Length: 298
Image 1: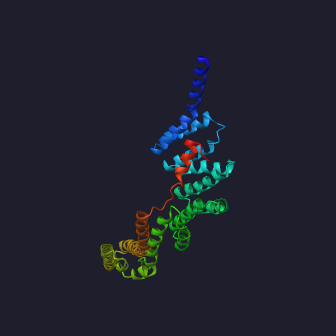
Image 2 (image 1 turned 90 degrees about the horizontal axis):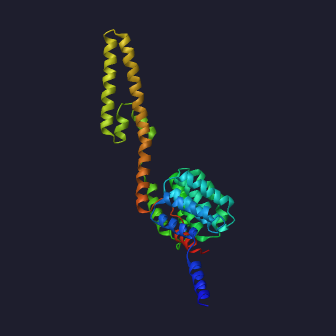
Image 3 (image 1 turned 45 degrees about the vertical axis):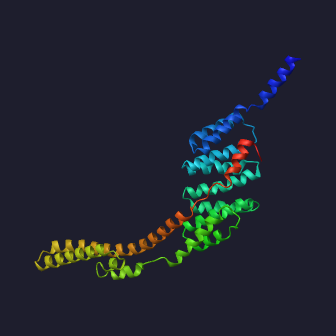
């Protein structure tokens, strides 16, 4: 009798012990929480090998994509997320993967493709208020990077007050107001003023460049005149050609400087907005993925 009870107790104790696959998954999550992403990828893949039929396998694949993304490999992450969205039988997982795929494209700098991915996923994400709000935030970030200010303003304003990203969205909306008052310089006027060498750069408040342009153009013009006056036609023609290149370069530089002036002002404002509220999307409700994986909740 004692032997039977001892055997039953040992069986219960053994059943309470986590399996090797469960231990692997917990260790992978620990590595992920410590931001040791590349080691975490290896452990998630080990879990997939140890437990190929697990209902948590899709979520482990999602973590692999996240690890690639946070590790700076956006293209590899996009490949993983896109595959999950295409072949997973879990509707909730597919929705998360679609959003993560669009975010990966955003991180990779493929902004138009990110918008297209979000547009294709709109109906799938609409049923989840948190995911749809996160998608709207991501759309706003993409539009802002593309200098589509009205569209960005519309997307950020659509995020409901209870959403975790609402505070960020409001700070960005405050910053966006500055786009209406950005300083700018007219490329046409800068080029026209540069008919008088250096004056276009003075208009751009580039005083030292303007002074240099005026001095060099004046020097070449005088040297050309002096060469012809002395009868050195060959030298005069060469100097005239060099002066023409320098003169046209001065006009081009002023026009390009005016365009760069606006780009710099815009980038400075974007940097300020970035400091107030990061122009990126945290993975939605990351704690839920941890619970799904470690505790098997769904």
